[in-house]
Image 1 (tube, rainbow, N blue to C red):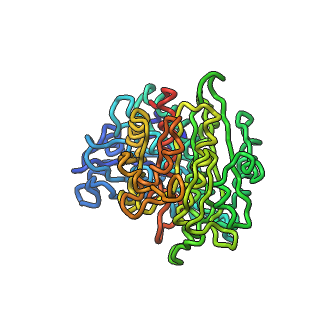
Image 2: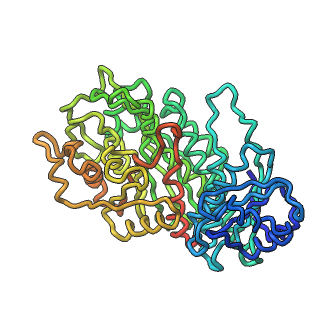
Length: 499
């Protein structure tokens, strides 16, 4: 899909489909009035006949309208004009794509600029619209014999702006959005692959392929023998139950000065999680291929950042393994020693994500990071607490937490902060080791973060629990690509390029 910002007159624009927003109550923008005049009052006529009222979510497709050059005119209700923001821009673009998917239209022209406020906030709206349109076109057909859908013909999206200044903002938004969309797509593709294809070795291969594509990206892959020498007893204890060898994948991008401390993203890369000896129920166990969405999001963010050539030093670390039952797998009551030297009593083998993450977090100390953010589908407790709408956030550094919260609001990929109090650490006490790997049912998302915090004492650190947001179940089953938008917004803000 190609994206282009333009200030062309929509009345004279030759396009497969012109998309116009109708505000609640049938109000038209200046460009809407021009289009209505050119079509001899056609839009006013359909509003008067109550075919569309401007209520958010309404759509009406009109073919071959005399007076304009567009072959089709799509009207979309956008709600109250004063409430139109990036969230509404996202819905506007999604509905435009969905409403025309089964037509022969190969391009769309969105009259978006005249719906936006005349300020820098239009950057976020244009960016969100492009990402939303790209997401609406997404399909995962890699494992199907017929891997092409003939109904999807869209190849171009024009974003109509009102003046030169808005075009400059829109062009910058498009450049960023295209890279972000590519990162989101990579994340979704990796996440949607089945566990028999997307193994730790496959992820390592994808990292090597990215290195060949982008010269600025350095990749290092540690094998189990390397991890053994480093004393990563927690991570290696998880992979013992699998025939697939664990990998520790590091992607290193140097876009700033060598002296600038890097930011580090750590993504949980459990390519399949059966729970180990503490085996999961069979219902929906197929969705445990999504236990590597944290790692996949790190791949997506790294790709987008390298593509945008952001002036920042960024390192992605992905500990990857499977968690399966086997004669050599962890058993409840086993004690392992982490890279940090702290011992862990494994009371539940299904709490394995924190075991691979804790060694990866200790490993990050060698990079002398400015901050570390880990991303993990860590706990069902977070899904119970926050549902599918917000990711959970916990941090040992409040300024870092505030940055992430703001990035969530600005990107529309929101998070909610949960406490990380010492009170919860009491639940991790063990009679036989320095800590247990679970703290009971109460506050499960928080005690999991408390566990990880024991390995980040030397770092400014934040933890994102994306168990509720990384994928959808049911008829729309599939990876969402979250929290790639959130993390890139966070990085853009750090680079002062988020407007």
